[in-house]
Amino acid sequence: MTETRFREHMASGMGRSYSLWLLALIIAAILLTYLFHSNIFVLSLIQELAVMILFATAYNLMLGFSGLLSFGHGGLFGIGAYTLALLMVKVKLSALWALMAAPLLTSIAAWGMGWLCLRLTGVYFAFLTLAFSQLIWAVIWKWRSLTGGDDGIIGIELSGAIGSSAGLFLLILIVVIVCAVLIKMLLIDSQFGFALRLIRENPRRARAIGINVRGYQLLVFCASGFFTGIAGALYALHSGGAFVEYASVAKSFEPIWCSLVGGIYTFVGPIVGAALMLGLDHFISRFTESWALFAGAVLIIVVLFAPEGIVRLAECFYRRLFRRVGVEKWA
Image 1 (cartoon, one colour):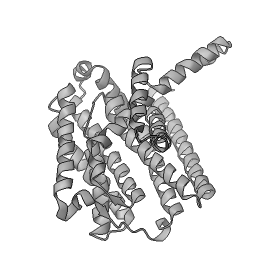
Image 2 (cartoon, rainbow, N blue to C red):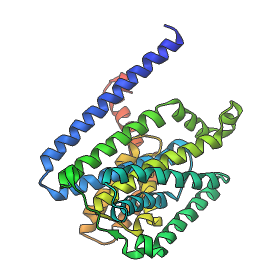
Image 3 (cartoon, helix red, strand yellow):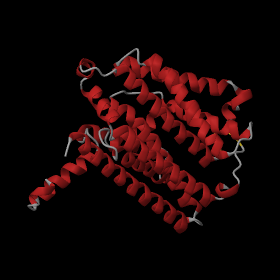
């Protein structure tokens, strides 16, 4: 078998694998909708988790797979949320059209932010993204005639198939599932993803073999902003409006926490981190208002004792367990 045919064979096999995963996850989403269609609390909780998973996964394209620490994704999340809210409330567009427009505008903003910020590296890049995020937050806060200021934008009305809680739940889950599969297939398990990992590990060698390092970084910044915009728009649908807190610095740190705790070098890591953060937020806060102290403690423990994240720690544990019981093929 020639090298070209081998690559085509591998690509077709991977394509079938992704299609099967996509189909299985969509079926699971439909089953969840059927099982919990009358339980508003569970539907809301899973919706919030799905949006957080997409936000963290989109952000980890920057941190885990490109080695770029950004503090500006809260601003991009806010742009996605406010774009959808403004188009639906003031322009009277339908939810689907607004949902398509939000990530496009967010990716344009991400391109502008990345084009300027990527002139710097390291901590200077990180703090410049933070400055842009604060600028977006300030514009939302001050431009009261457009954004509503600290009152936000409320009054998102849904109709048709997504007018019910179950319909909105199914829409959010399907959009998140499709986005996650696209991120995995097109941006991580592809030549683009391999180039990103090479740039992360050794940008000098990447330049030496002809890779346009800054071009790839700008592309991944835009891609990350695109999916972050979808997450922000879905969260606006979930909450029924857009509020200035969605563009705050605190929102920027949420996907960082999820990625670091779950594991930045794995696709599943941010998903695990998002589930843990939501659990701390919803269940620890029942007993104390200082749930953030527990989140900080978890982050410190993970950084000290499992710096590669919970997922890598679990992988290491299972390898040792299987090796101990003599199952060498899993070691």
